Amino acid sequence: MRRGSVVQLVAIGAVCGAGAALVALLIPWMPHAASEQAGRIDFVFWFVTAICIAIFALVAAVILYAIVKFRAQPGEDADGPPIHGNTGLEIAWTAVPAVLVTAISIVSAVVLAKNEHIPHASAASSDRLTPLVVKVTAQQFAWSFQYPGFGKLTSATLKLPINVTTKLRITSLDVTHSFWVPEFGQKEDAVPGLETTLVITPDRQGTFPVICTELCGLGHAVMRSSAQVMTSQRFLSWAKGQQKQLGSSSGGASGKAVFTNNGCASCHTFTPAGSKGTVGPDLDKLAQEAQRAGKPLQDFIRESIVDPNAYVEPGFQKGIMPATFSSLPKAQLAALVSFLAGGKK
Ligand code: CUA
Image (cartoon, rainbow, N blue to C red; front, side):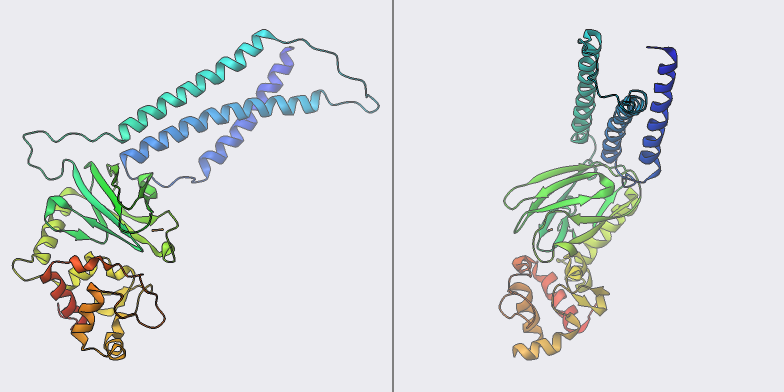
């Protein structure tokens, strides 16, 4: 091959490669990573993308060069000269892809292994944060997060301390859902009767969306929550504050805290709690609804929580509200009923 042709090929390849690299770099294709695991996944992505851009540049250069250089002249309709194989070229185009694919497999395997690794708590540490365990429960159409290391603490939003490895133990009460925080870079199915796990080490503070990414019914699109990453001190003081507010032994459970922590707000509108959900009935109109059901207000509220299908408000469907709130601790249920009845606490 003449030197001029090589220079031309390299020039075309450089232009095509630069164009593809600009498209890859200038458009924000991926969410801004907020966990160590997402950072590693991004690395694999960029590793593969760089290889793809190089191959694209090579192929595009050869195609464009051939289109221009070997174009049939007007009136030229004879067959091209017969050619024989090129052993060197054939070895190269087999060996190079084999090496690249092997490299991608090794990098991916290392990242997968690292992303599933949970550091063991040292025997000396009595720290409840190594690792932090959070039970994630999905149900149509809400998420709830429970912290077994902190008593009966539950929350409707996922609160996580920064730089602490957290093990999510995920399950579902009804159908298959899927847990996804784009900034954490991973998805994990929530399957009824099964516990799946996901390891997250957040490395950036902020509030990120928790999204259900498995079509799970009518309310799938609204099955959202949020994940808030904060400093360890702030996390611990939040957890302690919540434990105090929900403290059933002292009888001082706050109805508003019970409402918020159990995710009521994601489906119901209730002004005293500042919620605007529209999946379920408007709780600002509980008095009228109790009248329609023909029951005293407090009894009506209690029944609707522990046995949601006993009376269903016209315009809403049976079986949408989870029946699991019947297992709320007594003091929390009482506090929730009086909060809903009169906005107490
Ligand atoms: Cu739960 Cu979609």
